[in-house]
Structure formats: C-alpha cells, structure tokens
Length: 233
Image 1 (spheres, helix red, strand yellow):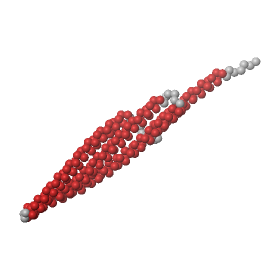
Image 2 (cartoon, rainbow, N blue to C red):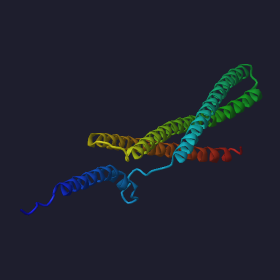
Image 3 (cartoon, rainbow, N blue to C red):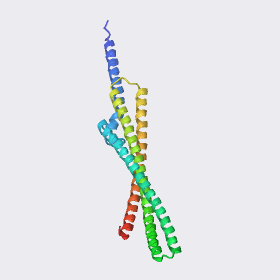
Image 4 (tube, one colour):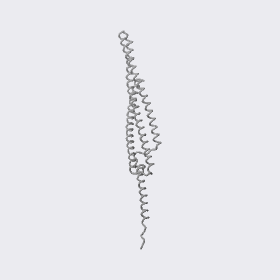
C-alpha cells in the first residue's frame, strides 16, 4: 500500500501565513489614515510642532494683555476729553453772563472782548467734540483688538488639543487596536479639525473688524489734523 502524503504540516503553514497576513493588514489599516494625513498634498489642517503652537499661544496671550492696556488708555483719553468739554461749557456760560453784564453796564469794549473770548471757546469745543469722536473710535479699536486676541488664543488652544490627540493616535498605531477604537479615534480627530477650522474662521472675521476700525481711526485723525492745521494749531 502506498503511503498518503502528510498534509497537516502544510495546513499549519498555511494557517500561520494567513495569521501573519491578517495581522499585517490590521496594522496597515491603522496607519493608512496617518499616511494620508502625512502626505502634504492631502493635508487640510497642517501638522505643527508643539513648540511652534506654544510660541504662538504665548504671543497671543501677550497681545491680549497689550490690547487690554490699550483699551484702558483709550478710555482714559476719552474721559479726559469729556472733562475738557465740560470745563469749556462752564467757561462759555461764565463768559456769556459777564458779557451780558458788560452790555447792561454800558461797557461796549469789555462786551466785545468777552464775545471774542466766548467765540474762541466755542470753536475749541467744536474741535474737542471731534477729538471726542476720535477717542471713541480708538476705544472701539482697542475693544475689537482685544476680541481678536481672545479668538486667536482659542485657535491655538484648540490646535494644541488637536496636535495632542494626533500624537496619541500615532503612538497607539503599533498596538493591537480594533476597528471600533480606530474609528473612534478618527472621529475625534475629524471633529477637532472641524472645530479648529471654525475658530480660525471666526478669528479671520475678527481680524477684518480690527482692520476696518483701524481704517476709521486713521481717517478721523487725518481730518482732525487738517482742521487743526487750518486753525494754526
């Protein structure tokens, strides 16, 4: 009787080969997302180093502190102008009263002098009111600059969170993860990217508001400077 070939070792080798292939496929599927993300042609939200993000965040915090100081200074300047206008109003009222007294007492030269002085103060008040409008615009600039700094801080904080999750995910790629875990991680990354993009859009719109308010302030300064020049100031 001819002996039958022993097929058990062959079956064992086949099973072993399939096990290795399945394991390799599993690891490969875990890395596919990050391979695509690492491709500069496919990246939507770029990878940045933690050091760069931290530096930008620190700068944004410093910018916010500066904006807060500018806001306080702008409000102080506005209040100062308001007090100057009030003082001028009191002076004009006093000059008008004295002018009327000079008229009643038949002192025409004194009446004329007081009238000239009152008119000069009224012109000064007109200029002060235009300066008050400028100071209000400067307050608006400081306010939107502070808002922009706040939004920028949120952007970099969210980018820190996203980059941290990306790093965690890469570290876990070599492990034995199931499809559910991989899908969950992918969903977390995707949602963080969406939140970051929305925050970046808000910050860009806020930056546009800053530019608009700054343009208004410069325009007011140019007109006021021209008025002062005409008055010989």
